[in-house]
Amino acid sequence: MNPNAIADRYAPIFYPSSDGEPVAESYDHLYAILTTLEVLKQYLRDRRATVLGNQYLYYASGKPKLRVAPDVMAIFDVEPGGRDNYKIWEEGSVPSVIFEMTSPSTRDEDLTTKKNLYERLGVREYWLFDPKGEWIEEQLRGYRLQGKTYQQIADFRSEPLQLRLQVEGKLIGFYREDTGEKLLVPDELAAALQKESRKRSEAEQKAAELEAKLARYRERFGELPE
Image (cartoon, one colour):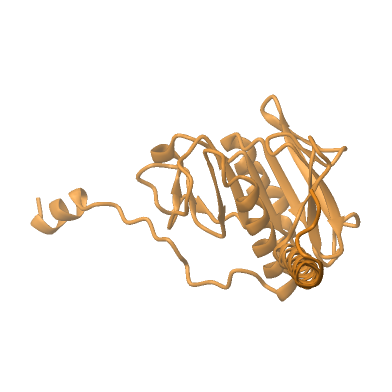
């Protein structure tokens, strides 16, 4: 046998982490991906789980061409943190929820190739979000595994995430089922933090003003009575 052929046979298999293609076809799609990714990462930060965005999902050991790159995927019962790519056979867990930000140009792939693959892999929920409303009138459509086949979700609930989903302009709004509280997107979180900072600053200023008034009182009249 050719020595080169022997070397090739036993060479480690390379699993790329990038194909060099753009992450999304428009700003609206990119913003929807990044916002969903960040919101779910914050939500699951104390869980044994990870959330990955636009990274290769490899589903067949030894076959690096068998891969897909979901826009966002939430995976439970794995170590938290990022990965360059995700290999199901190494991690031992299939993604529980996958989101694809869809458009007319990806419609056929999203509705057939990816949907059939995720169904076959056992992904519990598959959500399609059309931020521009170009082909999904309601913009958001979900599928949940019933047995071994996907059935369309009617109540816009994510059972694995225990969240209620709602279309809010060109983004998905996420609400906790236990408290009804909305998970804030980065912009909203920044605004809330700024508001809280202003409130704290105003409270500190009022406390300083009160302390100054008390100091002036003590100078004039002595200590306050018990």
